[in-house]
Image (cartoon, rainbow, N blue to C red; front, side):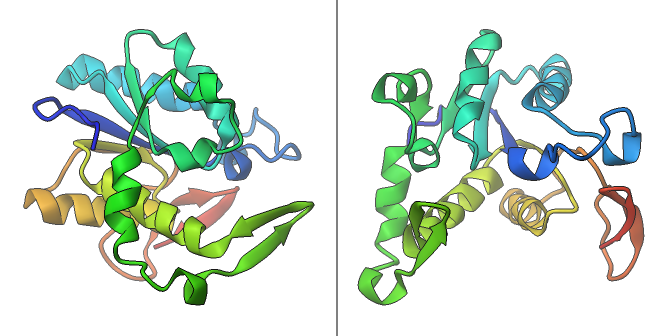
Length: 198
């Protein structure tokens, strides 16, 4: 699918719109805005420890690809539909995983039944396509070797659970907010300045 066969890869799930609300004060540790650079600081630690320089980026932000050139020591991969509003020249700055969509699409034969459109300002989004993209990216994240994300996110927690199930062991991770916890209603960290219970 475009990823290196014999090399390890870091998975980053970056949610810019959720991480960087303008009303939050960056000086407040419990409500700090985490930029892509903050994730890359963690990726550099992972590279120093494990020697991994490949990164799969999962994000709904089309702007994040503009950050890739700042880190020439890494090779970036991404699922192209995430950046569907980007120019064609920008898309080719990183390797793409086009065939992943084709593989997962076989599970969605009744597109006309599943497809729902949601208004987002003047933009219409294809609900079926959004669902397929989400599943593709979830499965791709679960096949990486180190996960960098947020464990207040059910998406990241599920990706990590699938990663461990696939590997048959606990895998390295870095959570940008709360720690992983294994039970229900346990306090495990903070989310937007409030206690987070898994």
